[in-house]
Image (cartoon, rainbow, N blue to C red; front, top):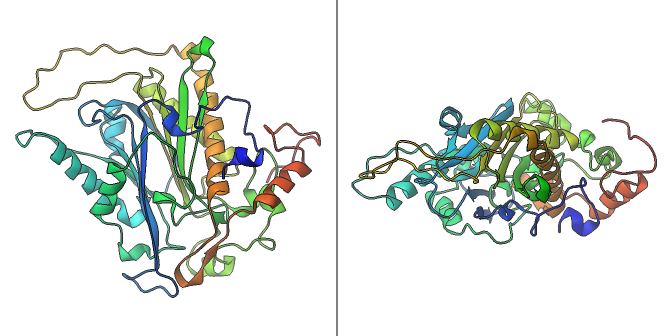
Length: 389
């Protein structure tokens, strides 16, 4: 189930055929989902509600054919391995992994090992893979370290350009969003042919936000479906006893792909615009939230150093004129907004550690709330402006 299956249309842009990040030719996504056990938390034994998601920019070996890339930090209470080299070089030289906070290292090491396996035994190389995290400890035995190299390798091996699983899958398995069950979501937009006809695809791992601030197409859904109507996963008093101020103490990772011929600095700008999509749904980048965006552009395929290879002194590249970049910005904002809503709509109610329940957003109540404001389609309502959260 996705937002458009409920008649919810975000913005006025045109989605790609699958309305997913894989609408960008060559991009592939793989998930590995771990769900087992129930009842009281027993560290190292479960319950387990976690996983890993892998995004590949193309199928030709990003190790030796990198693409231009950029990033943006909305709030930095999180970790993304390899981010400094991505910023320094302006290139993405690895797959992108998404997982839980305490499995970051194992996914990073798996990617490095895969690179070592795929290259010649005589090759001298170094690997700085890009892996991002959000914390799933509300539902998962996060300190049990259940994710293994085999799980990460399976996600990599299973990556495809077919339909992208959403909600309780991969890295999004144990995540919550705006006080509901969250997880993985994706969306895409195709800009007009007059300005290039490029595709922008977005994938999010949504584990952020406060219930009271959730907005969908301008409707204050979080206030309409408050904690009296649908309980929060963890009551506020328990969160405070754990040192957390409120349920907004989470994170979101956004991955943006485009086939436009962007250079690294333009990818930085594209990544920055995803913050507006987060804000449209009520995200504010709280103090304890780790909110990062990574954008890559496949419109230029570069040649990396390889053992024994004769590299050209220069490499030809194309660059989209900045005069025509605004439609890509618009696309990134809309696709991020819809990807977050898709994550919420696709997610299913999950019971995790210690019987904690993260409820799915009720589809009927969501539609009822939007219809009440005349805002189900593209935020164009008949009741005037909706007051902010």
